[in-house]
Length: 65
Image (tube, rainbow, N blue to C red; front, side, top):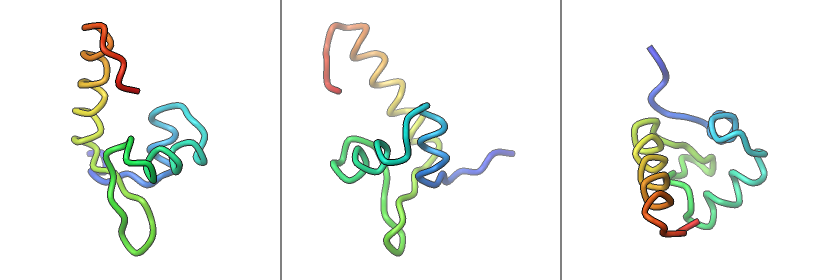
């Protein structure tokens, strides 16, 4: 069973990006996350849905990066 909540490090690994980049994107509201006691957390299911939406938008010609 996989963890349902990801840390910033796990999110960065999942997206194959640097942790600092993940932090900047989360702070800017570009990643679907929330803060708990000052630390970013990400719900695995919401991240999967976010990725699907991003892929679909790109396939439709939209560029909402």
